[in-house]
Length: 319
Image (cartoon, rainbow, N blue to C red; front, side, top):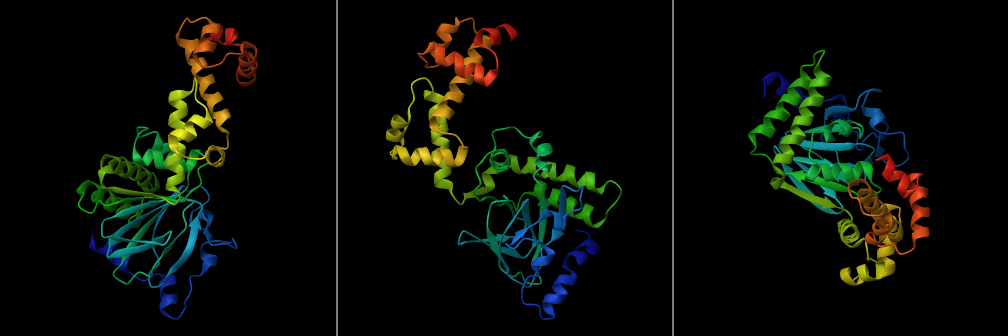
């Protein structure tokens, strides 16, 4: 890192000077107008900005808080101590942690030599990022779960990548761009953050994952896999036997995390399979209905038309 940028990073901010002069609590009004301590991206970002990068405030404990954006913390030098769900995590120099907007965490006071860079990123930014990524990787799953499902539990990804030169070089370029702004800096930072995420995907063997409610999440994943495989004859009671869970508990969990009942999820899967068979096979419609697990022809026609606004025959003719 160039010396003048390093000097800017270690220099005291106005907020830090006030803390050293006797302020003993974080000035929450700098971060939120909310009665709860939910840090508001609108306090930290300009109106049209999707991403900003700033140095974490040292010398004071940051109390339990959430934020309405996704946050990355990067340890430029020293260390960072996060407390999440009563679990203490100590990040070392060169390591990163991604925090979704549902997680509650607190940060122990950093010392003068601890320089932490916070990436503040609005969810909309990731519409661009997800276009760069394959679907089945740890970061895509983290982002999709956070942004596009009803799963609202705290999660983090902790990347232990201090020895990865590619990743360290990319972060250094982002910090350099931040402290030597030009007319293209904002666009450049977006591109570099995109490249950083792609590089982290390539090094997903160095990540520790965590969900505040990971047990429930794993049960939901198993339920969805069951429906995907046994949509023809599956039922909630068979699933409860397979997972060794009471059927009423699974029913509540499914509704909580998907906003749909087991029956509704099963129906959605059967209908999507029916559409696939109507599009890509020549099976008679009666046989399609049997293949997806329905016996009542009238009922199938009713739910199909309710969802797709046409009959199965009309759907096939339009394909």
